[in-house]
Image (cartoon, rainbow, N blue to C red):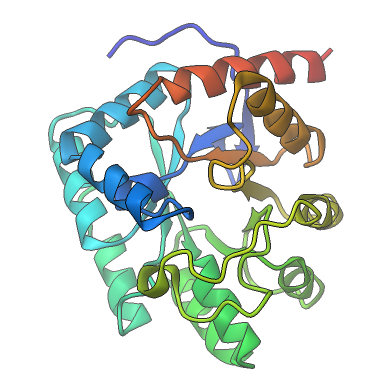
Length: 284
């Protein structure tokens, strides 16, 4: 695998040198957060080999961190990738999979995988739903289970107030996954895996609210859905603006996560080149 020369910087993130732009995985599992038709198109395109080619491309362009669900499908592809020697210094941020009936069973699957995770974080939609139902202790029990694995522990949320609560109450976690859009706070019930994108509202007033929280909390953060699940990347100017807004409004040690759909154009190459331009100016 050849390394393309890029200027994508790395920062110390929970003890690891991670590129400031990292890769998401929702498209691999058909979660477009748009329409069922696009979900199906993503599933048809992202065969196991196409997922692995996307991981190759990410590494070639200097992305050395990726988020991926700890479900049986992704773990099977990761096993192939590992056995083929294609995962070099590629840090896996494992997301818990809410469809498992027992949280601990899902963790056992994640940490028992051949390609060990570097970090583990609690799925955002599930965490939000539990907190909205008043089940804070259950969330904290889940986070303790992650902590007990010995891996750096994170939580994801779409709701700024939940990030603030965890920080103010000094929950035992190492980092936050912060969604730019509050998809769970406006009455959306159930999980994406059950009802797809039904009930999700992408409000342009949301990103500044989450960015304010990201800058307020002391723990490192990963900003995600910065493109509004594809709604804010219709052309290169819009992609540049979305990336610039994200990097301009998070802390210097924070990361930005982007999912890619490589079917029509090389989004990894485009995202990395634009991010490099933005971050090069930031360092001046």
